[in-house]
Structure formats: C-alpha cells, structure tokens
Image (cartoon, rainbow, N blue to C red; front, side):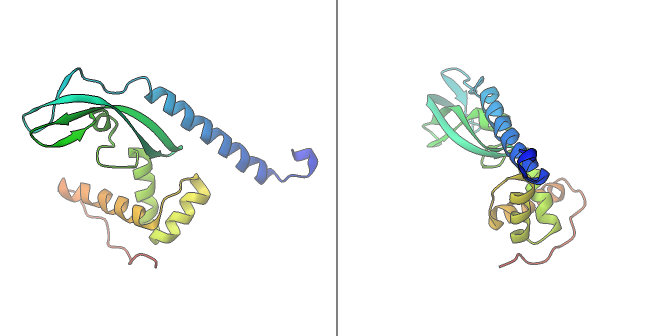
Length: 161
C-alpha cells in the first residue's frame, strides 16, 4: 500500500479499524462461551424465584465497537419482569455500554462539550455514540463518587446544541 502512494496515516487507520473489528469478533466469541444460565430457576432479587424463559440476544457497545451477546433470560411471575443474570455479571444490567466504554465516554464528556466528545470518540476510538449518551455516561460517572461519599467532579458547561 505504501509503495502505491498511500499515506502512512491511511494505512494506520485501515489497520486500526481491521484490528478493532477483529477484537470485537474475538470478544463476542469469548462471551458466547457462557450465556449465564443458572438452571431452571434463579433468584429475581426481590425474594422470588424466576423461571428460565429461553435465551435473548442484545448488542453492547464496547471499546472495540458493538458486540452481540446471547444471554439466558429469566422471568419472575410475581414481579412481572424479566432479567438476564449474565448482564449483572458483565456489568451491563440496565446499560447499553460496557464498563470500559462507559468510562471512556464519561472521561471524554468530562473534558469537552458532549457534541464535541461524540466527534472525538468517533474519530479517535471508532466508537459511535450521540451527545445524549455521553451526557448520561458522564452524569453516571459523577454520581458514583457522590453516592459513595467521595469528591464531586467540578461542574461543567452546558452541552453543545
């Protein structure tokens, strides 16, 4: 490629994209090895026993890009809700971002306006998220230390519109 006049930067970007995609597929394969099946019943977290109801797939945004994960799904008749124990194990219960992606996104959102952070994350890390997702991630990251009694992050400017 370089011998044909292509710039080193173009080659670097192409290789990074290919390696990141390969990493996402590898992570997907590793996660496919355990769907979190806990048997025919699992504790729902509210004192009831939920029943295994099959498997469900979902996509999680990771530092390597989107990764599809299939997890065992349980339904609690008393609570009238379903859940996947594997989501809790992976740290993605109630979230669409992996812990690593959430941290990366929160850090970007703490440094620059949310709209600008979205562009930087897309350009530098290949992660596509909108400004609202960055805002939520930054707020969640700031809420955790406050809930634990730790220092608050300094206030930041209003999001870009």
